[in-house]
Image 1 (cartoon, rainbow over the protein chains, first blue to last red):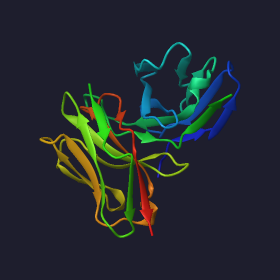
Image 2: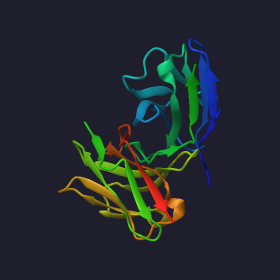
Image 3: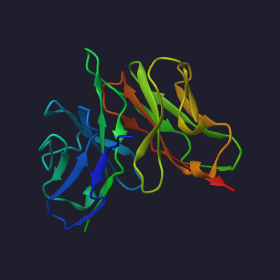
Length: 118
Length: 113
């Protein structure tokens, strides 16, 4: 069964360093997302990406964050200068687009990357 | 704006007994509603979804949920719990299926032998 894959599963980084979290969405999906879950808190939306551009983003997704689809299969989240409060589980997700109205189907999630900033 | 309230942070049941995980939502439009499950060190797996078709939705692993508009609820049930059902369960809402998913805080289900 097709699945979303994320690498690495766990990343430890020094405060102030740049990190790139990688995701391979399901191959025929066109909508991509990043969500995060700080320990003990809700899963929160960060950003959605469609047609090679950001379609929506939350207040969390500030200038420190960026997303990219560098090739036909990868979707990355970059955090330029990590802070302690960026420590969280980061989930990538993807969904199909169907119909004339480009309605998204349900999102399929990866297993997450646990980011620890020290 | 949409929101989700999962009324119990932790539910504990005995193996073979029914499971009820409660969820209430708030949405300005016709919502799409989902239940996702997260097993330890695993990703978020879709259990079932409601998208304005039948109000009683059947999902994987014997779970089902009923959309009740009058009560703004979407409770998750299973007739008989199995040890493998122990996990974190998230109720999720999306307005008309085209806005970002909004997650509840999650309910941790424990199953006792």
